[in-house]
Length: 219
Image (tube, rainbow, N blue to C red; front, side, top):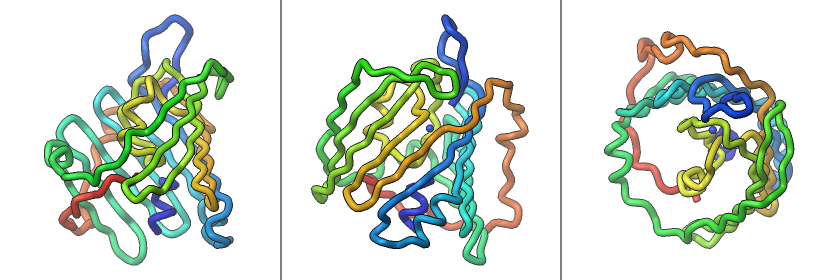
């Protein structure tokens, strides 16, 4: 389940315009290796993620064959809804509380921004290579193609906060190499159309609240 969540940030732009802060993006995911777990690879291949964003608000929807997870974030709090495994639960965290959670110490990721460029969905993207090591010494290499024409605070769930803070825009393609397991996340659809405020009006009706457990740095 944890690996599936890992498969668990995009906005369009026009040349010469400032960073866009409103829109919608859809990603597809793929995984290989998975420790020989072909079922996990198949499940990952049938998973997808959509992100709606508008200024400081974002709604991320991760859909897999086993569960659906939605994360609503604004300037004040983050609410996560999980629907699957026979139950519907949600957790609520004030952003200020999340910032106070102690994190295991890990080395800063090593980031190299290259001069390589390519177009993804019609937008110029820059290649970034990241070497990331967690507090246990496990290493991952990420190849990230991002556009500097998008400004979105939503997390894709594929990269941690330390890496996300170093990206000057929005990733449209991410390759993650963890040795035996390799993952790929690719943006397949992008819209610049205004996002209705109603998109972010989610309800907790029908869900049971579960007190959030302080999260550790996913690195």
